[in-house]
Image (cartoon, rainbow, N blue to C red; front, side, top):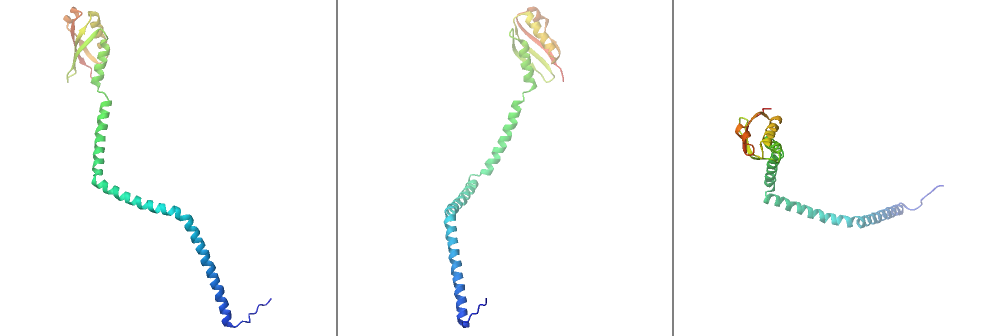
Length: 178
């Protein structure tokens, strides 16, 4: 098949222009429909996010101003310093000293029949334990317990304390160096 257009050149151009115009109208209507459809779907989620973003930026600006006014960075440094001090105090408190453990052991060795009044520890390792005992037997048992404990190199009590029996006593000793 052969297509021959017998129209004059001016009318042929007018037809081509009309075809291009219709194509442009169709494309612009199609673009308008796509834009309207997209705006209907996107605007309900975009507008609240836009306003929320503006409010968040304002909030961040206010927070920065408050941070500077309240000198929070200085306060944070002070809190960290105090936390470090508290941690060192806490670790010191949690680890009991050997002296307190020794005193607790001596109190346990004493038992119910012996009342310890005073325990003196000197820098040289000399120990002096004074108190009262119900009887001579309890005092001698307590002295034996102290010797068996392994904490002392030598333990001695005055002979007068042992002879008196149920009375006050003083036991002298020397701590064993470990």
